[in-house]
Picture (cartoon, rainbow, N blue to C red):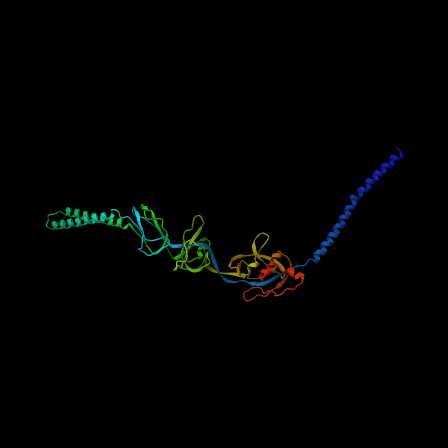
Length: 392
């Protein structure tokens, strides 16, 4: 092998070793250097990372009346579909749809046809049977008529009287009258219509008092008593006080709920049948916190609750049970007797976080008293959260 070939081989081998050494030792040194820089940077960040800031109030549980709230609808205390009891055509209507009627007012009059003649015929037969019965009794007293003959005339007289009563009833059925004071809700019959027995003539409702009907879950029905006061809010916003007049003793098989009826006054007949209503029935007293709706939040699992401060500066999440209220204040249960409730900043901190706490005083209604003016620097402005604005 000549010298030039050996030199070439040595150069190639040397080049490969030089390049490989960079991969074997250079990356390790670089990685160690990068890790050292990363650890140093992380340490500086941890050391300099500021705590979150929250505002809190001391919230104490108190007694409040617990209400059962269920949706229902109004329902007339009586609703009757009046039907024809004989076959005849309508010759007169005494009322109009939507009209108020008194008991005994004429609703519809049907054609009499031959019914009056049937009554007169029955009356004549009764008169004849009465004479025959009187004569038979007179003859029986003189022993000119047997007791069997007398009994036969008596039976014929009673049969004639029964026929007369039937004929009079059939005649009376040609005049259909209101069975009670009410309102004509529907009037399907019209003049000239041929009515058969059982055909609807009119629907009459009694709207005073008005009922509010709802279906109560089985876990709450035992809390409701007859005669108990209830509050009703109709769909149009009008409010009424009523009394529980009926609670079902048998559940609906499909929904496992119990029917409850509340009676409210409707003297002016202003409440319509079938309007949506919300029923509120007091069912006892509970301990709960009275707070602003804005303090409610959700955790990562989607549970509804509030955030509080424990151990002086540590954030905790507490699930709650809603117990009613309105847009201004709500009642929440399932909490300790007293908590340090976060009212500002609760949406921006997590459970377990260490925070800077600013405790706020409350007014006579339990509302947090916030500072009227905030510092104008950037840090304070950025710390003003949406929750704080709502709390104001």
